Length: 451
Image 1 (cartoon, rainbow, N blue to C red):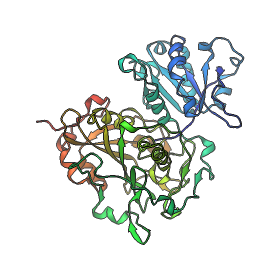
Image 2: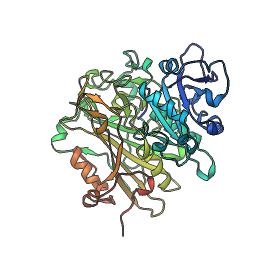
Image 3: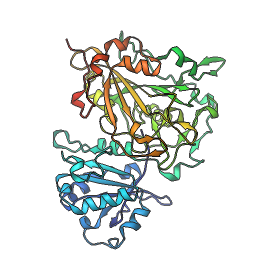
Image 4: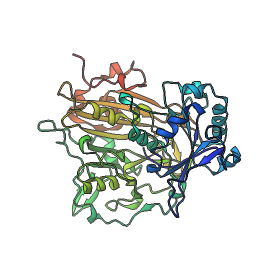
């Protein structure tokens, strides 16, 4: 998932290093204990300007400044998001707990960032159930790029960009004639992983359209494809090829409508906006198709921002294990290629809750296929994540995300999406799935069948 923005309580000083002339920067307020000031300055705030974010640091940690007289309520009212640094020092700080309480009570979106192994609940039970980001430091070196991606994927949509003018619909079908979409042979000769098919009763709900006189149901983009639900007007599933050796970084661009299908078949803005409305949650992650030549990466980046590639998700949805599944799989893919194919979509249930005229999926699924670096064998695994606890009756609540490794067969049964031969490669069968614990760490993932 996606979005951008945030900030919190103002008891500190702001930096203007990232501010652009004539634009309002998103603002983040960083709650932290003074003992963590060095790592906050050296690591935590470094990726923020790339995300289009300016920041405030609390006055207790910053010392005296012109801005320290700002009241918490005033700062809270003018902020976009709060980052709470989770650490051993923070767990012993009454000041940190007080500011977190003020942020939660003020209904400011809040992202906990762990800089050590401290459990967020030890810092404040007000953040215990929230999705959090962990600072990764392989070999003792902080991974700032990964931190940027993790924080960026948790930042909700900037309200100024959620209005009627935030979606570009000026493209024409001819603009997409060079898109080849998902490649079934991407993983190598003799290792075909076909595009999934929607079968059974669900097949009647697949949106079809006409391109150059041909009937199609696959929207082809750069390095990925999308199949749409006709009744729900959203992505039924996406399929992307990822080449980790050619990955590039591109700045986020605006949302756009796909001109190959009717505008009324796409959710433009009805349920999207500032909380308690929803974020446009990417099915194919924005970074995933951004690889290849510069031109190809630029196209992949822009294509990922089509509303056809999104499903309504709670503002704080993407987090934890779910957020890094693709990256973790790439780490285990064949070292000389680092290629994976990923399929993602929602479970579309008849009793999904309706908000602003849109039925909101409660759960999402993901299937990943790649050639394992150690075994040299093609493998495939399935996962689910729920936002069930976020949507209860007519109210929105914070709740724990539940990510699990599940059998691909169970995903097929719950979605009507058939994955063909790769379902037979799954190391998890439905009997094992019934007793499988929720995933809390990547080390719990099984990629290959037990021998």
